[in-house]
Length: 193
Image 1 (cartoon, rainbow, N blue to C red):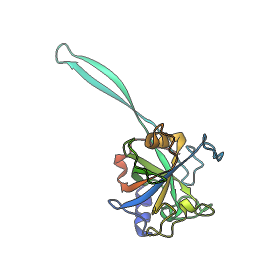
Image 2 (image 1 turned 120 degrees about the vertical axis):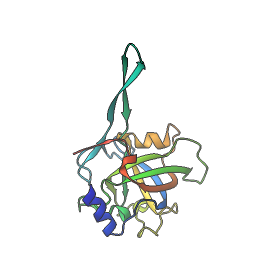
Image 3 (image 1 turned 60 degrees about the vertical axis):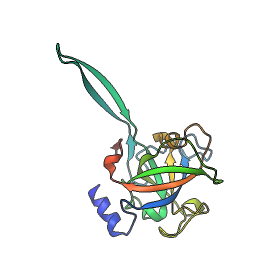
Image 4 (image 1 turned 30 degrees about the horizontal axis):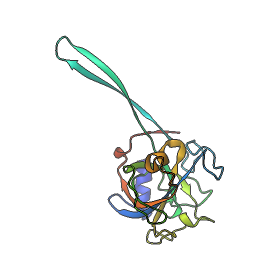
């Protein structure tokens, strides 16, 4: 992904440590629009994310030596990002934002009511949220905004667990908050192509 990061930097797309106002929506196999599974290799980026399993060994006592094993599942949350950040339009393939990672924090619902659930999550961009006929993702550059005053929209992939992690079981399907591009060492999944 080094070449993708360099391409993103040269294209003038968002870079690490810049925080943007963002809106958050969800799509995938259980949405009301019939989107289908969003965690498949046919995304605009050509890859999807998966859970990473870690096997941890714990030393239980110093003598005699005994160990305990534990599996820890680390989610590989993914999202589509609005076209102004993705870098190319519908049908143009992988954009420069493919593989970038973002820390997302939801603050309010679509009506501006404060939210008191969930912690920030880190997602990896795997798909395009197209601008055409979609005002949520039709910002003009990184200074333009959508109808919620957001510079970016992240369409959270239901099938990767991202929407459940950010929205919880609240029934909220659209939130507003902040997005900050982070190094992908902060993201805990694995890429599957």
